[in-house]
Image (tube, rainbow, N blue to C red; front, side, top):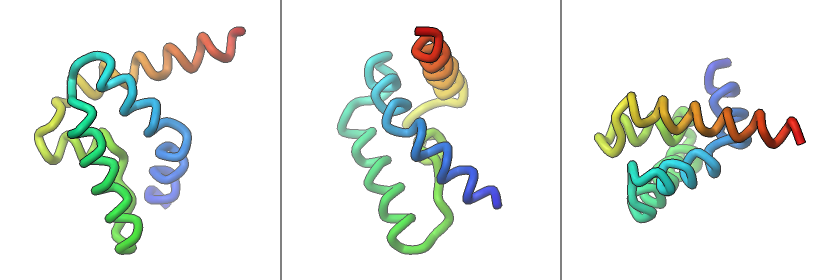
Length: 84
């Protein structure tokens, strides 16, 4: 069940998570592409789906604090888009 939730969150937020993380300078576009490729490889190999933040944390690409900052910004933008 948790894997289904991760897939739903990923479908809705992962692309934007990556864009914001790169915009904020926490990670390079190349490292984000590598994390996205790893996520896709997991999916194609029928391994459990992992969110980009989890992959980046596990690989040392981002800290937990950086991921939290990106998620806060992501949800702030989501709220402001819905207010329009």
